[in-house]
Image (cartoon, rainbow, N blue to C red; front, side, top):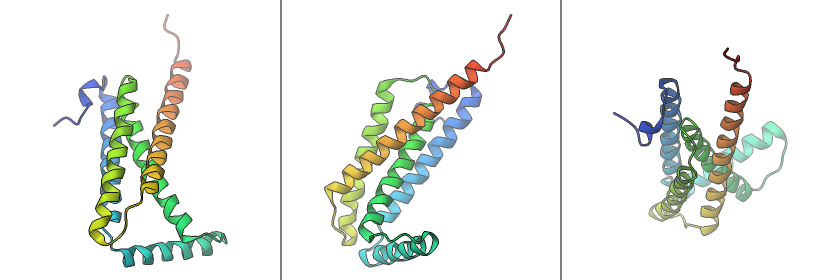
Length: 160
């Protein structure tokens, strides 16, 4: 069974990396939607525990709201990075990157809408934070893998 876009991955070595990043992106989707389905009280308890852990570990004082917004950004930055990692295994096309970002936007919108089912209120600011995280992760992956590819090409022994 081939994954979406896999027919554009040229070499078998790249196919394995493409599949790895695609699976990691799917895992992030499950994690994102699982967190959205957590009821408000349980979500507050999780945030409180994590906040206490971070404060104990680093000594930093952080507001719970800041922690929640950082969590939104981080989840989607990872999703964007994994999608960018998958895209970097095939010839670059701007429209693929745009589709990946649009996909992240749709996921963010559905993610916030899903929170209504658990008694939590959706917030448009969270969708924008999610999109910014996804964009940062996507661009970071594309840039990183482009630089790695150029470094590999530059250090390849010359034929002849």
